[in-house]
Image (cartoon, rainbow, N blue to C red; front, side):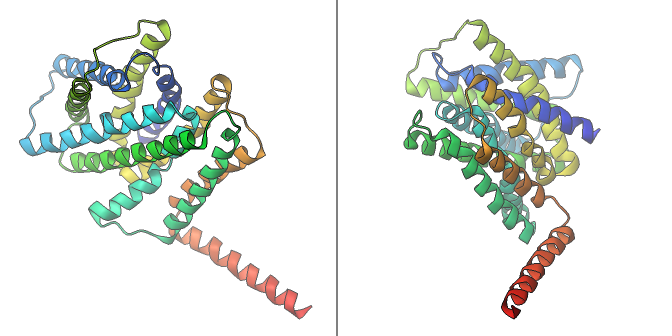
Length: 312
């Protein structure tokens, strides 16, 4: 079952990045995200009523779910949408793949989970690969400031997502039903987004074009109802650290879409970058002994070669 949930999450979320780019335009960002999660919340609550599932939760759970709504269903997506307006959606997904690293760090911070050397090494590789992936976009069509702001926003969105994962881990440990929890968290996130819209004084508007409405329903139903249910179910089953490993595969799918529809240009530098990003994230979840043995052999071989060179 975990394998199915894993594949489902990768396939759905690997394509939502392009759908997000279709919502950018006439509708304010906060409203687009609010429509998405309002629709998703309605679908989830309707499902709970049809299945006659209980919707009552303790007050402490609601406080956590409000925090989850902020991190998973409002603030993070505000960052992602604004980032996608400045850099290709495929690159935003690459930054999002660093959720694996953030989850390990936050697990240490909130659950006192030990951080291994392989995590530091894998994270460093991921950052190097990310820089290589960004280089092909610096072709004059985008300013350096746009790239920097887009990258910073994507980082912030990914960190908020990781914080939401930590709350999801708490929910699972306290037997909060995933669907019920998602329904409330999406409702709270939607409320925050509409409150933000009112604060800005933006009039409610919607784009009735086929591309916008199609993207809205895709993001709400498969992207949110199914995707988040599958992902947070995995968090409960195998933990946030291993679940976040699925984000490593998102860029592969997302960058294919970017290359076809957003003009992302592949070259040797970009290809090397994504390989390094994937390798860096994979190292984080390799058995610790395996990574230690590989690094040990590498350094011993380098020492032998240096000694052999001196002997000559």
